[in-house]
Length: 118
Image (cartoon, rainbow, N blue to C red; front, side, top):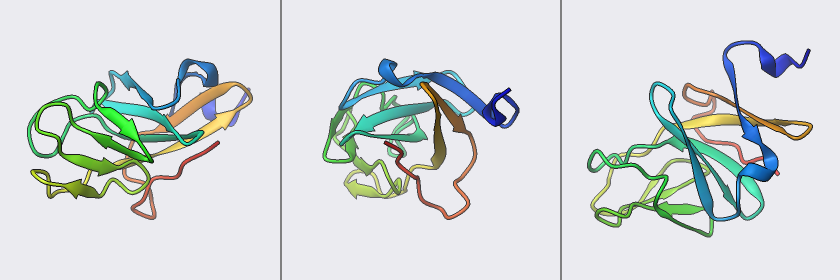
Protein backbone atom coordinates (compact mmCIF):
# COMPACT_ATOMS: atom_id res chain seq x y z
CA UNK A 1 0.00 0.00 0.00
CA UNK A 2 1.29 3.44 -0.93
CA UNK A 3 1.94 5.87 1.92
CA UNK A 4 -0.41 8.28 0.10
CA UNK A 5 -3.43 6.01 0.54
CA UNK A 6 -3.72 7.01 4.21
CA UNK A 7 -5.08 10.26 5.59
CA UNK A 8 -4.44 13.11 5.29
CA UNK A 9 -3.47 12.54 1.63
CA UNK A 10 -6.34 12.47 -0.88
CA UNK A 11 -6.08 10.85 -4.29
CA UNK A 12 -6.90 13.55 -6.86
CA UNK A 13 -6.65 11.38 -9.99
CA UNK A 14 -4.18 10.07 -12.53
CA UNK A 15 -1.42 12.31 -13.86
CA UNK A 16 -2.91 12.15 -17.38
CA UNK A 17 -6.22 13.57 -16.08
CA UNK A 18 -4.60 16.99 -15.51
CA UNK A 19 -4.19 18.78 -18.87
CA UNK A 20 -1.65 21.56 -19.28
CA UNK A 21 -2.95 25.05 -18.35
CA UNK A 22 -6.19 23.67 -16.91
CA UNK A 23 -7.57 22.73 -13.51
CA UNK A 24 -9.46 19.88 -11.89
CA UNK A 25 -11.69 20.94 -8.99
CA UNK A 26 -11.94 18.59 -6.01
CA UNK A 27 -15.05 18.66 -3.83
CA UNK A 28 -13.15 18.77 -0.56
CA UNK A 29 -13.56 21.03 2.46
CA UNK A 30 -12.48 23.63 1.52
CA UNK A 31 -12.81 23.05 -2.24
CA UNK A 32 -9.42 22.97 -3.94
CA UNK A 33 -8.22 22.76 -7.51
CA UNK A 34 -5.21 20.99 -8.95
CA UNK A 35 -3.61 22.90 -11.82
CA UNK A 36 -0.97 21.84 -14.33
CA UNK A 37 1.22 24.67 -15.55
CA UNK A 38 4.66 24.42 -17.11
CA UNK A 39 4.50 20.65 -16.67
CA UNK A 40 4.15 20.99 -12.87
CA UNK A 41 1.13 20.24 -10.68
CA UNK A 42 -0.08 22.73 -8.06
CA UNK A 43 -2.97 22.68 -5.60
CA UNK A 44 -4.61 25.84 -4.23
CA UNK A 45 -7.95 26.76 -2.67
CA UNK A 46 -10.49 26.91 -5.47
CA UNK A 47 -12.30 30.04 -4.28
CA UNK A 48 -11.09 33.50 -5.30
CA UNK A 49 -10.22 35.58 -2.23
CA UNK A 50 -11.84 38.67 -3.78
CA UNK A 51 -15.30 37.18 -4.26
CA UNK A 52 -16.80 33.73 -3.84
CA UNK A 53 -16.08 32.31 -7.31
CA UNK A 54 -14.41 29.11 -8.52
CA UNK A 55 -10.93 29.44 -9.99
CA UNK A 56 -11.12 26.06 -11.74
CA UNK A 57 -12.63 27.78 -14.79
CA UNK A 58 -9.99 30.51 -14.78
CA UNK A 59 -7.27 31.18 -17.32
CA UNK A 60 -3.95 29.51 -16.54
CA UNK A 61 -0.70 30.85 -17.94
CA UNK A 62 2.92 31.03 -16.78
CA UNK A 63 2.25 29.53 -13.35
CA UNK A 64 -0.69 31.80 -12.53
CA UNK A 65 -4.48 31.56 -12.62
CA UNK A 66 -6.77 34.46 -13.46
CA UNK A 67 -10.27 34.49 -11.98
CA UNK A 68 -12.88 34.64 -14.75
CA UNK A 69 -15.22 36.85 -12.68
CA UNK A 70 -13.16 40.01 -11.99
CA UNK A 71 -9.71 39.06 -13.38
CA UNK A 72 -7.90 38.77 -10.04
CA UNK A 73 -4.69 36.78 -10.58
CA UNK A 74 -2.85 34.36 -8.28
CA UNK A 75 0.52 32.59 -8.32
CA UNK A 76 -0.05 28.83 -8.33
CA UNK A 77 3.25 28.12 -6.53
CA UNK A 78 2.85 30.53 -3.60
CA UNK A 79 -0.82 31.52 -3.68
CA UNK A 80 0.18 35.22 -3.76
CA UNK A 81 -2.35 37.67 -5.16
CA UNK A 82 -0.75 39.10 -8.29
CA UNK A 83 -3.47 41.44 -9.57
CA UNK A 84 -6.31 43.46 -8.10
CA UNK A 85 -9.06 43.28 -7.11
CA UNK A 86 -7.66 40.43 -4.97
CA UNK A 87 -5.19 41.32 -2.24
CA UNK A 88 -5.33 38.24 0.01
CA UNK A 89 -3.37 35.14 -1.06
CA UNK A 90 -4.83 31.70 -1.68
CA UNK A 91 -3.95 28.81 0.60
CA UNK A 92 -1.61 26.33 -1.11
CA UNK A 93 -1.58 22.58 -0.56
CA UNK A 94 1.02 19.88 -1.02
CA UNK A 95 0.95 17.72 -4.13
CA UNK A 96 2.67 14.36 -4.57
CA UNK A 97 2.88 12.00 -7.52
CA UNK A 98 3.12 8.28 -6.76
CA UNK A 99 3.54 6.34 -10.00
CA UNK A 100 0.66 7.55 -12.17
CA UNK A 101 -1.47 8.83 -9.26
CA UNK A 102 -1.69 12.41 -7.96
CA UNK A 103 -2.33 13.03 -4.26
CA UNK A 104 -2.97 16.26 -2.37
CA UNK A 105 -2.83 17.07 1.32
CA UNK A 106 -5.39 19.70 2.29
CA UNK A 107 -4.04 22.23 4.75
CA UNK A 108 -1.56 25.05 4.45
CA UNK A 109 1.78 23.89 3.18
CA UNK A 110 4.23 23.89 6.14
CA UNK A 111 6.53 26.40 4.44
CA UNK A 112 3.57 28.58 3.44
CA UNK A 113 4.17 28.03 -0.26
CA UNK A 114 2.91 25.43 -2.70
CA UNK A 115 5.25 22.93 -4.22
CA UNK A 116 4.92 22.10 -7.86
CA UNK A 117 5.73 18.58 -8.88
CA UNK A 118 6.52 17.41 -12.37
